[in-house]
Length: 505
Image (cartoon, rainbow, N blue to C red; front, side, top):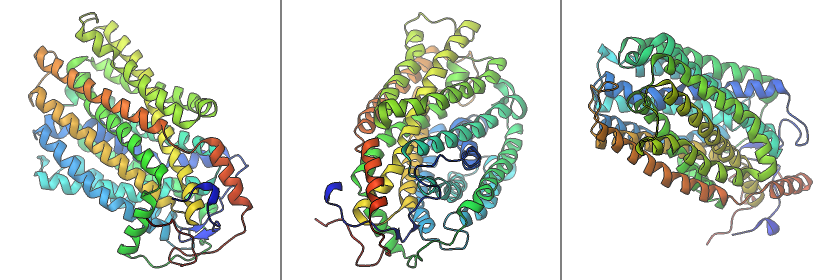
């Protein structure tokens, strides 16, 4: 495998279009651009909040589907999506229009996404669909969301190659993603499904779905329109025609990048942990911590506060320690802080669940743990941008769409596995489908806590180990960008035999 020291000439353009970022590497991005770009992530936040916090409990406790079955179905939907995602990324890289590579996707996909999102929360006849029906709806939602998010997030390395500015763009994306998700949570707890019993009634879920659908469409299309003047340009090079064989060949080539494989191993563990934590939260809040109606209203505000803290600490952490070390420390810290209340509860030294003191202490630990967890997510996602130049240095090609679709493949598979694990934890714990807070037998709750903690501990260790081994440091990235900027331009196509390729064997 060729190293960076003996890499071949760098192409200034490739099958994916122009290489030069829209904003010069040394220039700070305007605040307006950061806000507009980040606004597009609201759609992902709406989807993630729905899938992670409400979908399992809605289909299990409200519509009466078995939790284990729902977990299997959602995992299968993600596997379908995992096959489609890299193809969407490759298609995005090869899109050639006067509006650039990404914008056509951001204008076309949100409307059908909105309609299918409504269907997910308003199944025909108001009854639980068959497992196959749920699979079709969930898979379609995920595919259409990918058609929005992959092109949007692929704009990051095109907008800037600066190490810290990329972190800033992802800070804003995560901020707006959380704003979208938390807004939906607040409305769910206060307007659509107020109170603990509200989560167990069907009426509010339809309005929840309609509002979320409109918000997703407005966010994606509004963000695209706001960036239109900057990125709506005909790519410098016309890519070769799309072919399924060529797409998978390019995808395999991109995914074999060492740095991406290391990221994928750590990111997979981190995303599984996040998916499991989000999807099990309604169960632990209802049945273990027995939150009151007022506490449920405060719950999104606690998460919002943790996001605000994250927004101000992730930049300094990356500047001081770098992305890999920040991810490692925060992954371990998030586990120990987050599970301290559960350990104390099992030890019999925690205040009575449902009391004011119990809720206040739980929210304190939850807020700190969530802050550290989001830092892990931002660190991991931002690492992908550096892989783009590493790959370009050794092949002469850029493949933002391929790598970010790969990131989505990892994240979605992991989220599905996390939700699947929650379904199995709930099923193994033998929680009844008609359970009510305060009536569940203690052995059932203890079993849920132990299984949840054991899985989280293993995932935290795996995430910390692999993300800490990510091989691209700030210094290496900046040296690579400087070297590429100084290299003589070479115009090439992905199928041009003159394009430098990774040695085989």
